[in-house]
Image 1 (cartoon, rainbow, N blue to C red):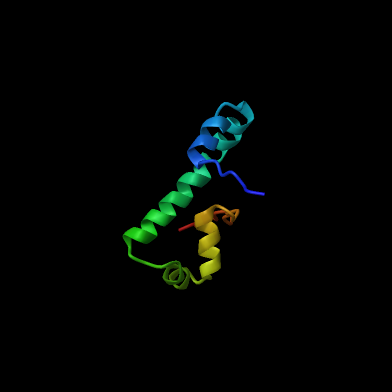
Image 2: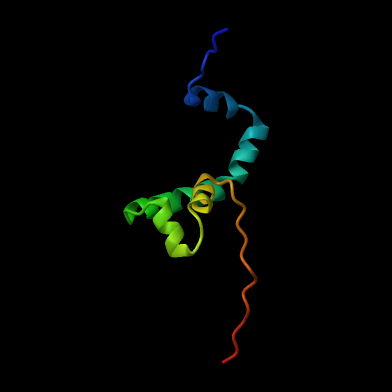
Length: 83
């Protein structure tokens, strides 16, 4: 059995006609933007994922997950500082 592969552009064009797909895609736009910004910043700095991981005190796998969007980010609550 041979498989027919559909170009991603063709599939995306078809999916964009589905309102549920469009809503889900739009809901993820912030994550897509963050991943793209991380990849661009790393590339602009001429760093590998491993180098970024070392600088951040984490693993290369964690950076790969960040860049792929497969990692849910969370931040601890910000504490106010009284001077």
